[in-house]
Amino acid sequence: MNNTKTGIAIIGCGSAAPKNKLTNQHLSQIVDTSDDWITSRTGMKNRCIADKNESLTQLSTTAARNALEMAGMAANEVDLIILATSTPDDLFGSASKVQHLLGATKAAAFDLTAACSGFVFALITAAQYIRTGMYRNVVVIGADVLSRWVDWSDRTTCVLFGDGAGAIVCQRTTESDRLLAGALYNDGSQHGSLNLPYESESKLLVEHITTQGGNYRPIIMKGRDIYRFTVGKVPEAIEKAMFQAGLTSEDIDWLLLHQANQRIMDAVAKRLKLPSEKVLSKIAYYGNTSAASIPLTLDAAVREGKVKPGDTIAASGFGAGLTWSSAIFRWGQF
Image (cartoon, rainbow, N blue to C red; front, side):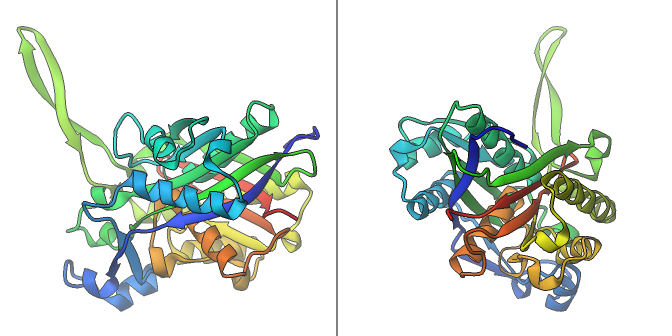
């Protein structure tokens, strides 16, 4: 993606999850389902659910703080914070509050919304700021609290979603660029396959003039459409990124996908001819955490010692929009 000497290195990661654990057994008390039904169809056993005292902002700040600690960087060294989320605490955005709580007094901050693809969209966006020389140190956060918008009487969706946050620290480097390739994609014609729509009601202000009032409805998802879309588009996007980077499947150490469904991840890996042991998965522990799922899974794998400096990772986010994305990067300082 970059032919100049200025590149991007990913030097730290961190994550955070709510304290409350909602198991499959718990869900069987809420809707007509079972542990076997959920596990066999999704690979999920547990998900973390934020209570009234846990906010998107708090989770994001903790994840960013943990990432900065790993990177050995102080908050006042950060130039930019990009918060990928579809569930901010404030409709005007939550990145500025994260900046304040983190103590990143010199950083600009903004929210980016691309649903479950948000983290990869934010990573590629961060790379542009770094490569142009505008910023040196960028914190990228993926975070969502989708439990706020779940219909807990709908067993097809309520079993899927959990809450969490993950973050990485990106830094300018004059050595080899560690973000080897990447691309962003959209198909708005399929927007209705997965959305969280606003439902309005007209309110009369004065004669002949009305305004809208209302609220957002719970998540609506057509699972089969999403599955077909994903297993077709995601491998293709990763293959294009590998070609762009001059790599083959044999050069990939880890496949890091949005944690939507274990069946989807297995199908994508099979299409790419990657063995299951190369697929990074924490879906059993966290469920689908939307924009948080990729950095949260990465952080767990790094801290477990599975992902090591210099490893090549093929990542892809996909979801509402419909959006999908790909990125190939080498992890860490090496």
